[in-house]
Image (cartoon, rainbow, N blue to C red; front, side):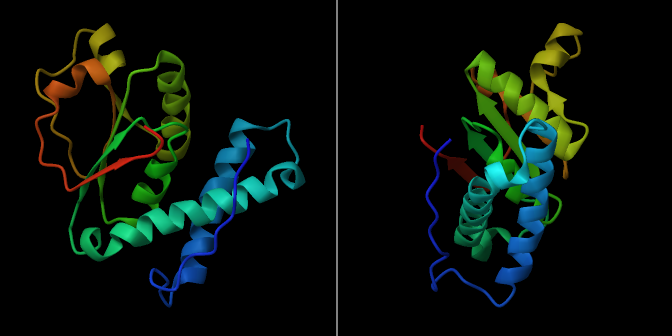
Length: 167
């Protein structure tokens, strides 16, 4: 993995930037430690720093709008490693997160991260396998939903923010 580090622009910075960095860094460290136990922190410290800063910048770009909402709903197209879920669940007030992906490999990786980082998740594929998948998907505050792309039409909820990276 290659990453580049860019300092948070002054236009986005807030007085609590150091606190945000610390909270996101801890969240990212726990992800790396659980996902890559064979690596020493010194081997991913730079990537961790880049990931932390990128997540903070993504949050700060939408914070003026989303921080005003109680229980915002965020839709993430192609969550990759699920990094948007980290800042959504760390910084927003009681959010509902919907991760939507088409790739089976990515879906499996995201499922692991979502469960590790957020505990219980609403996985539409698992619900479908057990015959309990809802006809309509409407998230409740605090929930993390994982939805395969072909079931996106079942998401019948008002979305406050849509994020996508490298789509």
